[in-house]
Image (cartoon, rainbow over all chains, first blue to last red; front, side):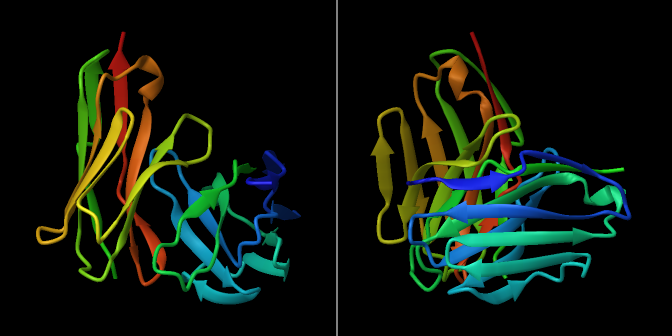
Amino acid sequence: DTEVTQTPKHLVMGMTNKKSLKCEQHMGHRAMYWYKQKAKKPPELMFVYSYEKLSINESVPSRFSPECPNSSLLNLHLHALQPEDSALYLCASSQDRRRSYNEQFFGPGTRLTVL
Amino acid sequence: GENVEQHPSTLSVQEGDSAVIKCTYSDSASNYFPWYKQELGKRPQLIIDIRSNVGEKKDQRIAVTLNKTAKHFSLHITETQPEDSAVYFCAATGANNLFFGTGTRLTVIP
């Protein structure tokens, strides 16, 4: 399996809802990432997990809560989001963040709309 | 941190012509430079990458060049086809994170 998968593909939620995004990879990668991408912009790094431990949090608001239950799974829990949080949320993985050449593979993304 | 600049922001070429996209980076410690192609509504897909110990790499119609001294790298697409139309992002790896350029929207006119 050489893909990163994400569910759901689309999500519409109200500002009071709680929802979760899921990401999965079975390539044996030990680094996983969450990115946020607004229209016509590059992906923007949110969180990095390395060996199931959170290693980077790019000053993301607490209404976004990441979780890495095991080396293959990455979740992003959403609560009390704002309309400006509407975006494409991309998950990525790489073999090992400590490697010099760290090729990242992206999932198809979850298109999130906050009403 | 790393800062990656990308030009042009939009590029239109006739089918069969070549397209060149240029990026500069700021961190001399960056050592890995991937290029991603992103079609509308889809994931970024790695199309080619280059490591800092190599000056040029080619894969069929796509080539990338790297000038470490000047801190710039470029993507070259030859014999462009309509399916090459997409947004292209360059990136540089600094501190083991990817820093993306702002993207180039390439349109290949049939």
